[in-house]
Amino acid sequence: MAQSKRLGFFRRHALRFIVSAVLTVCVIWAAQHSGLELVPPRQKFAAVRWWTVPAYFVVIAIWTYFRAVRWRFLLRRTAPDASNSRLLAISLVGFAAISVLPFRLGEFVRPAMLAQKEKVSFSAATGSIIGERVVDGLYVSVVLILALLFVPTVHPLPEHVVGLPVTVNQVRGYAYVTGLGFTTAFLVILVYSFARDFAKRATLLVFGVVSKKLAERLAHEAERVADGLHFLRSGRDAFGFLVDTTLYWGINAASMWLLAWGAGLHHADGSAPTFAEGCAIMGMLGVAILIPGPPGMLGIFQAGILAGVTMYYPTDLVQERGSVYASLMFFTQIVWILGAGLAAMFSSHTTLREIADDADERA
Image 1 (cartoon, rainbow, N blue to C red):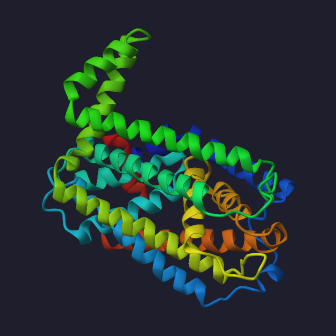
Image 2 (tube, rainbow, N blue to C red):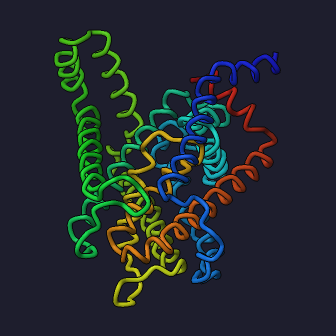
């Protein structure tokens, strides 16, 4: 029976695994033919301050902790006894699953493990994850838009992102559209949180013109996300979640600032990168990885970083050290996420295969 379940998971998602493998090959091929260096040649690493890499590794562990344990504020009502250590272990496994499973299948792992360990309904746990994603999307979008409006860029701006057939104006436009989308989603959730009956009637009325089934589905999903953000009704929980989220993203931006300096990036006058630029690059990466991609967001991750550094550093320097910066960040994060996830799985005496089976069954 167990063997059948394991095979069942891969069979049910065989198309996604095949598409993911094809997409990975396409990303590698496109990178080789567009100038995007996924792994820069050794000589480009000559200017790296190598002590900043292990320092960056440590800082990743710090912001990962806040990213994981802030979940307790979303679970105050549904899993009040969940400890920080339990949530950290579950989150580490979940983050690793998101990195290795295609097309965000790993997003189901955290709610499935929580439902298994804490006897919480899978639906409630999933709602909290979706709510967390909406808040993160809004947060990082606002940070990015503020950076695009107020952080000085190189002048004149390059027409294209270094190493990519994408214009800088297209990238900036995508950032604004993403911000608008998350703002709209958050406002809808707020209405569902505080005026649910009105919001549900409005959804059924507006979308029912197109399809009654679609309207009911949208209303159901919005209600579930609103349930995941019930903490908004509690001043203490809302404040705690906001503090932890600010620490998570703030330390994340600081780590990107540190590694930018460590990779040898600087301005035309020789001055060092700024924290505000770190925030902008973090925001650009945050909206870039919303695009569906291969495991680990290979290629999309590097493209997001290059889209950011192109706007703030001289083009010739970005060509020389931008890919080094992106490569160091990508591989350091992958090593941390997979290493921490494997350690958490080992401590819980389970495997990703078993966890994925359980998550898929519950979903």
